[in-house]
Image 1 (tube, one colour):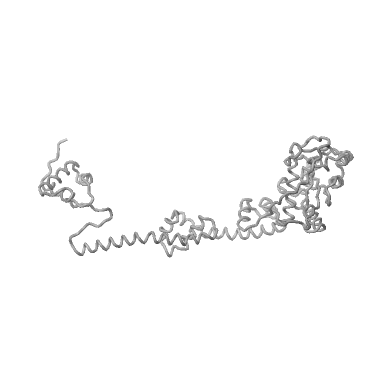
Image 2 (cartoon, rainbow, N blue to C red; image 1 turned 60 degrees about the vertical axis):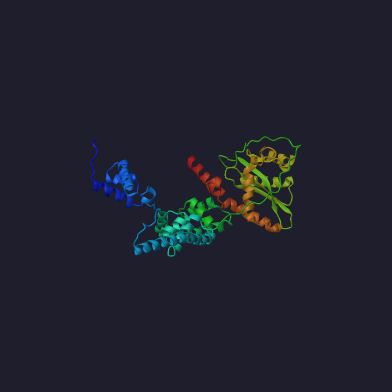
Length: 412
């Protein structure tokens, strides 16, 4: 390609443009003019040589953002004032950011959810600071903040609905003696005609501090007898049954009194519905305690003939007297491994629930008569009203009634 023939006037204008443009490079000016970079450089160097000017003095360097020096006094003053304003603004920015962070630290001490409280902080201080600056300091996306603002009405409506739901939950929670957690509360609300999700119930319970009762330390009630005859484990940790009256399980638990003494409770549960079919309360842990509970079970069911009864290796359950009672009632005995609570886990869980829901965080039941009344009330209510997770949140009585109804329907 043939080279262009540039006029002297074009060359002079090109050199003047380069020399008068702060921060300009040969490449940028050459691109604007449509000439070769090396060609422009040759023109500039030739012009400087003609004028006797060195490369350093020919073109002053200008810092980014600095104003171009001017010989006119008024222009020079204007440029200096602009520079001073710029420096003052750059100094004010850190001070403003520190002020925002100090206020935010006090604001976030309320214990609210962090993201939500940051949005609220921006909203509460938008008249004092720019939203853009607030979001930058707090690390928020402005679009997220404006989306949060737009959803204010919907959020307020949800909060009103949560407060109303909390009132309903408190009613159910109170009726359960403050024992129900979110699964049973949800089941109760649904039965009362309220369509509600369990996750929402759990969230509202956390929000309004509606909680159950913690478990207390256990006292050892299982004391095995090494000399007793071996009884096989017929359950193998399967605590389920296909129908009532076929599989039972039993255990003993302690009931603390105010004077440091204990009463003891022995229970017999039906594996099908977890119904308490027999129980006995006494101030001792002799064999009579568990024998009385099993006799009550036989009376409740009418007969235990052909059933299996599972227990741990406590001395009461391995005694000759209890073995003779089982033979008399037609009951086959089953026992888990020695020292393994998991082999009788369903009974352990039952007794834990009883004490959690009756003691409600206190250390004892009071005196012996009060203890008997409290436990008796809970055991009867357990069968008739308390919802059980193993029964699809139906009470034991309701679960057995549904089974009998279905059986009669199939037979018809």
